[in-house]
Length: 374
Image 1 (cartoon, rainbow, N blue to C red):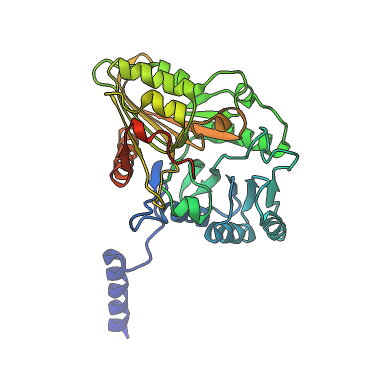
Image 2: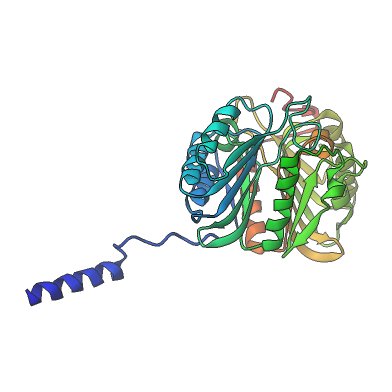
């Protein structure tokens, strides 16, 4: 008997040492995630969200917001979390068909979980007069991380999260950013209409990550202003991956930078005529679109490498729900993050940009406009 006990103890120790025992969940870190509808990575974003929901600590809270909220894996995982003592709040655009069903199922959890639908009063938004187009999750604690803000470009359905190119960025352990987004959530829930919400919840930076909220109704264009802070000294390069590009003020600033010898690359699913013809064909501008029935870009990302905001050799990413069209600027509920000088994050966004570029079709001025059928 003694020998059997010794042998059993030795085997148990060996199992631990060789990793046969159950591994502890990985700790969540700040990171971007990209899907790839052309490869084996089509579900990466949904899997990332499901992993964070499953990892939420009992007694913690989750907020989820998206214009379209149809993915059954995300919905079912949120419902399961609400039944397991996690307070879940879902916010979505008034145009969702299954909103009432999700609302009732979350109420059944009885722990304060809720699904909130923006009131349909001629607008499908909660704050603006357009759509509730923001796409973000907040976790008070998940996978060993606290104060998690997770912002993306994908709607939660197959057409967007799976079948088009999208990105999702997760920021961990950033209390200031988390609390600022918490204030945004309260404003969405209160549905206080404000077509210049940008001025109410002003852009603020927390630990190298800056948050922007829309609509903006003062006549200014945030992205045009961003480009005004760029200089073309030393080979500055600008990359844009955006579903819809129509704003002429942004195009004018890009043209100015192209004339100043900045290198500019644009991937757009929809490139509207005026903006397109202003830029495409310039010697310092290259542009890509997509063929019929081809998976297209749904991202809303801007990357600048070079001289920005008074300093050389910057590497900056903007990402979120904001298309380069008028609706995203002045009508919709939108949110954007700016991530400054995090080399691995910047490199990941550039690598993703190059992947999309390989699957897109380079266009010339004669192709303008394109993607209007989308």
